[in-house]
Length: 351
Image 1 (cartoon, rainbow, N blue to C red):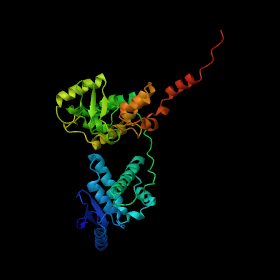
Image 2: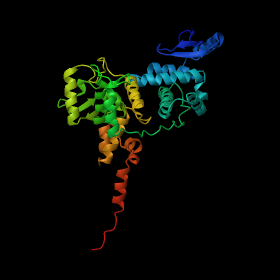
Image 3: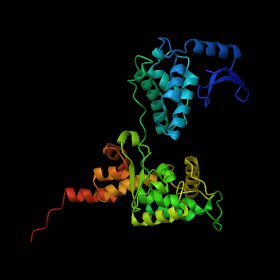
Image 4: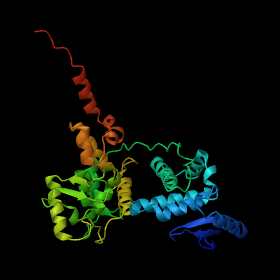
């Protein structure tokens, strides 16, 4: 680790991580900060019996995240740095499940999935250290991850119509004539609705990812590439084929879907734009861009597609995630009523 420095805005002493991307808090008092730093320096050998959490995490962030995407690397790095700010001085052998729980509880604004992702990042780092022979075992190995809440909100046809109508508003709530390029967000919503793809897939798709017949997007790098061991294929309807051809003609290189300034969409830009529309239209709080994916999968199931077919369309390695998290059939009341009628048909009246 580098030499500690005082961060005036936060009134505490920090030290740069080995890769120089994160600032790790040591203490508010200079003497305490340098004592902690010297202790970490003395225990810098990762295979030491008394190695502390901060040292193991530093090695993981520097060497153990080569196959992780940039987005996941940033999120995991932020979670791990935050965990080290609270438990970095703790010897790995003394870590307990309570340490993980108490850390998560210091972030009451985190949702279920944020808690689960942060805990998983810490667990993966410790598992990597075990695989590398740095520590004998993962002290949190038997800790159950926080349960992620089910994603249940869908986008109905009427809600989609309202979103498409209001999309040109941008930052202003006052109806006005759309400026050039301001309809770019509509294209994203059309793609989300017609493909069922993840928002990240729509943001990153390029001309090079489109098949010669323009009937599918084939993504080599995607969220589940490590698990499925194969490219992600997004099959295109005739409408999406037409839209893809138009965008390919306009954008021969780089992402097909660009914002009003001609730049690639960022995850946060999509989130903020959709949040403004949701508040303006008074849609349910859980309605997000990802809701389009849930709507696509649920509609496919209700229309009689098999779990294996829907799993292939959604890019999942198996049907378990579809069955557990995405079917949402409890929201399809008419579908369930019809199923109940078919299960117990009324007796035929005698002739």
